[in-house]
Image (cartoon, rainbow, N blue to C red; front, side, top):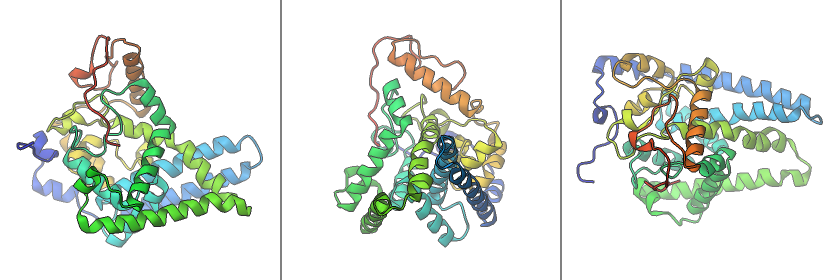
Length: 342
């Protein structure tokens, strides 16, 4: 693609004066530390509920709540620290990147470089390394993804590839060569830790099952739904983030869990802006970007309806959420546009 330029504010025709951007993008440790303390306290609270419910049927809803609070912020924190914007202090970013990526089940350097590639080539076929489903998305794939099966298979496969140094062409493409041995080392350490956690019940140690393993499984669907709506039904191969990416409105609880990444258009326009400043950024560029779709639940429900109707050969026009024109059909055969890269 000789005329290709990185996907960001400049490629999207969005303008923000340097003084305002510098003010919004200022990094500091305080908001990240407050968020981290709140997340920790929340996990203590939900973990206490799990402990109190052990041996009763109420342990399952308790683990679902605990798992959502464990999994969604881990994904968000892994994402934010991969950018290096969660904290001003580098060691804090790296420490939280390691812990959150371990929960998320992705080697931290792979997380960082694959996501950098995703920002550089957002939703460009064959270039974006983080396209988690085929385009157009169908119901069977949507359902399998939301159960967590497809993401788990992908992450296990990547850890194996990194640990055995059997790097794919895509990994070699987006990873600086000196980082490859580090990725292999990290993957081997992570695999050893996962194996240790898996065998602890054989020694009569069951707390990881109730507080980590099962909650991580139960919390996965909400995390995956967030991932799916970021770019689903939008335009591939566009230089404009406004055409390829979705923001949505939400309540304060979801904004906290997701670290304000519901402002996803704005994040892709200016990825150097820290999570705590994204609402301020959204306000600064609101006259230059599409109106956010309305609500997490509503957006997910409409996406699910669209992919179901597509698989049934029905009209794929969504009631309210944004769609690229080519995603809207009156039914008929499904013509493949692109294969997933995850």
